[in-house]
Amino acid sequence: MARSKDPAVRTLLVERAAHMLRTREPVTLRSLVAGTPMSTMAVYTHFGGMNGMWRAVRQEGFTRLAAGFAGVTTTEDPVRDLTALVVAYLRNALDHPDLYRVMFDADFDLEDLKAADATLEHMVRAASRGRTAGRFREDVVPLDLATQSWAIGHGLVSLVATGPLPPQALDHGVPMLIGLFTGAGDHPGECRTSVEQGWKLPTAG
Image (cartoon, rainbow, N blue to C red):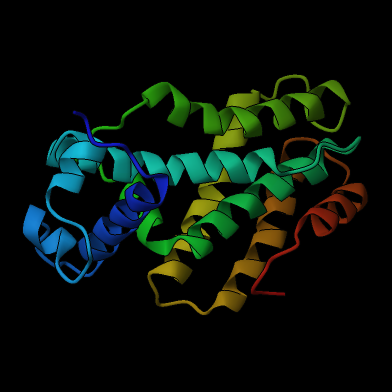
């Protein structure tokens, strides 16, 4: 008879594996469940083995990021919304630092590559709306602008989450995004207002 799967156990194993990877602890079947009430069979029950475990660990970071993006309210201001999506990216990294460090480790496959790619689409849609609304020039490619916005957020939060910068350094994102968006055609004054409205961090500024 197949063992039933417990979502809480799955989450515990994923988070524990991510933490062990970040702290460079050797991750084996036995070390993963050591000190917990679980047996090694739990890894097979929930993931089919260690290979499935690694895929799930990477995927979980993108799953939580997607949930964070989905929680961003869409307004009539696409520049504010694109900024808010960058902030959601930062928040996901700060709330789940262990998973964040594993998300982009290409040594492990993803369970669902399309689902991971879909997270960027949230930013692409906001950038596209900005171009349609006349905030960005017609020659601006939404995918390019979304990627550049993502790169700003990724660079900043990586330096904060892994050191050496303090959380306050995240606020450098405001002038960086203003520079990016005005370079894409947005009016400086309107852009600043939009970015400042969208820039609401849990730990900085």
